[in-house]
Image 1 (spheres, helix red, strand yellow):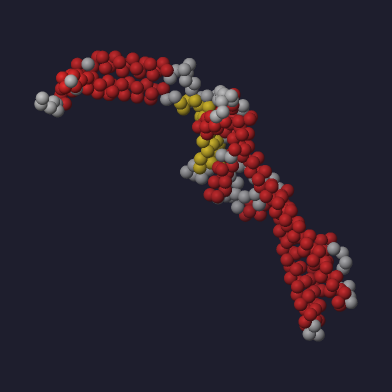
Image 2 (image 1 turned 180 degrees about the vertical axis):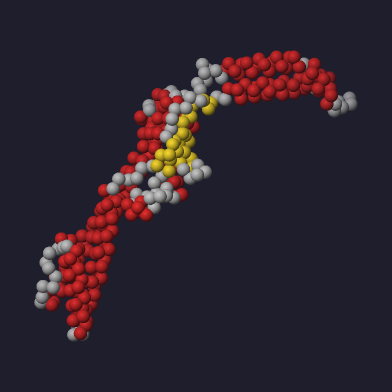
Length: 322
């Protein structure tokens, strides 16, 4: 049997001949798509978004010097990771009872997986092109979507506050320990110098209780005593005095760090700079009913036309081959 010649006009004739059936079937399928996508069958989904910038730093000095700028790339990435953390996620799930809201069956072994999967599908956290952070929440309840987006900022700031305060407290404790050890060391050397010199060059008051004037007097006394020891060529005393002066300088540096750590620990952690709070939007984002109906209609025309051509031209050939 000779092969069937390729003739596109024959295919077009078949489609034209069956046009009424194809259009009727396409219209019927489009009507079904319109019916199925009604709110009664598929609940409409609404979207709310909040935009924010992370603060530049928790340090008081850094905030003063960089108050006019927002967080760096590193701080933006850190803020996004905090918003995506399980602690923020679980706080949202608890407050809004999302297990019940998402209709999760807790008797199933994989219920937590389904819960987190649904949550991740409905919550999107991303960096924008302007280096702000976007928190977008989709839900069938527009009011809840906006509330979740806004509360996530609060929950994220709480988590960040807890992390920073914990780190500051650890650093503050370490500095306190170093400072106390250095004070004892300075007081011990001062007593030793008094004993060697036979004079009360330094008061027996603990260093940490001395005023700034008394500490300045100590530094002057050390310098004068070093000059006298140098004139007498008392190298042993010079070495002790040099070590004492060095430890005094270390102690002053430690005290500055201690004071700054104390200020930072007792200062409130900067909150996120919210530039656009989420508001309830009653314009649905899914399902896109019009798009689905049009896709169903034109897709049906294409598929039915192809099927009619195949049925009219090739099915008889296959039957004859048998």
